[in-house]
Image (cartoon, rainbow, N blue to C red; front, side, top):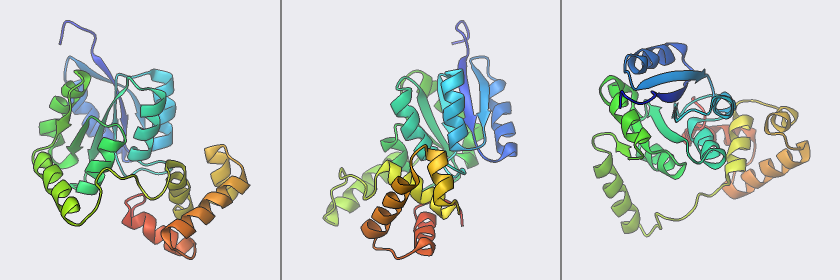
Length: 220
C-alpha cells in the first residue's frame, strides 16, 4: 500500500489525550495519515464534509452527537466513506448498533495498539473488521434473541431524529437550543419530545435522562 497515497483519516473522540495517542499510532504508518480531528459527533460530520477523508474513526460516547449517530449521518451524506467505531465498550448492543449505523469495524480502545492499524487497512480495502470474540458474540446474541421470540431484524423503537432530540434533552439543552442545533423549529422539538415520552412510556425529562444513560447516549 506504500506506493499509493496514504489513506486520509478523520479521528473523533472527546478526549484530547486519546486522540493524541491514536494519532501517534496511525501517523507512524506510511499508508495512514490523520488529516482532521473532532471532539464530538457534530464536529466530526462538519470536518468530514470539509476534508472528505477516506476513513472516519469515531468514539461512541461523545457530546452533542454520539459516534453512532454521527456514523448514521455520515453513511447517508458520504456513502463512500469508511467508518470504524473505536470504543471502550465491549458491548454487544453497541456492536449491533455500529453495524446498523454503517460501520465496517468495531475496535476496542483497550487493544487499539494491537488492532487499530489492521482495522484501518481492512476498512480502506472495503473489508469488515471484528475484534476477537465479536463473531461469537454476534451468533450468541442472535440465537438468544430468536429463542426469546424476538425478531433480530426488527427496527428500533424510536427514530434517528427522536434519538438526537433525546440525547440533547438529556444533556440539559433547552428546546430552543435543540432547535438551533438541529435546525428545526421549537414546535418540532416539542413534538419529538412528546412522541418520546409516549413511545417509551416515560413521564418527564428526568426519566428521559435515565433512559438516555441506559441506552448509552450519554455518560452518567
